Image 1 (tube, one colour):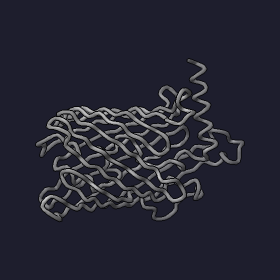
Image 2: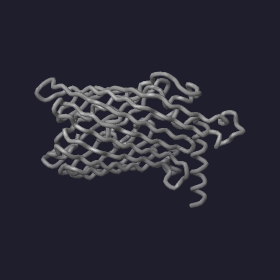
Image 3: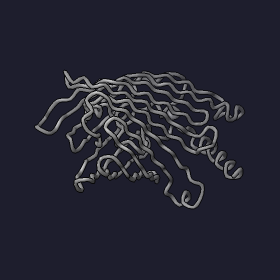
Image 4: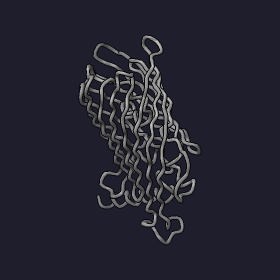
Length: 303
């Protein structure tokens, strides 16, 4: 056990060094349970639920390893039915070894009816992002890591979503870069660059007691490969969800959720699918989500 722990610790440090920057190479918001937690990706998604809600989602890699990547997301939505709108906040907190990023956003979304069953929602979000990279803690004698990085930037974003009771399709830019601040180079500041997202899902009836929801989340950052998530979830009696997720960076996840009108609890286990993961050391990720709905709660939320 000690040998395995030591190998994992060294592997994590190697990812930091050879990857130049952890946050610089990863897309934000690519969690497994995205299909039910989209407000931080596209604030227009808040219009799909007439109830208010508060939710928390946490991710953790390398359980038991100090400095392992972890993320925590908090979201609160408040409907404004009198003007067919919604407002709220979301907070993101990411930690990986010597890197720490925190972001706070407030948003406002407005929906308009297009046909008898379809709607279009438009949303704006604004906030602030802060990044700290204490690279000198790795090796102060190495020129590549001797300088720490401090970045604080204002943030603005927008999103649009076409939706009905059966589907949603959305485009969003939740983090639109306004200008550069601080001393970090352009390569170091990839985590503060503009990200683009496409989202979609459809809720189909398999039988009276079974529903199926395929969903996708596609993300793009200039200079990085397109990253696509594809998932499928079966809902049994609208109370139990069982699903699978696959990402094009060779990661897969199994998902389980327990659903009630007011409360929802979800769990996912993500693992690598490449040949060096299967049968070897696996970069597994545990993800837990908890949400509470209040106000106009008339039925279980599946979409």
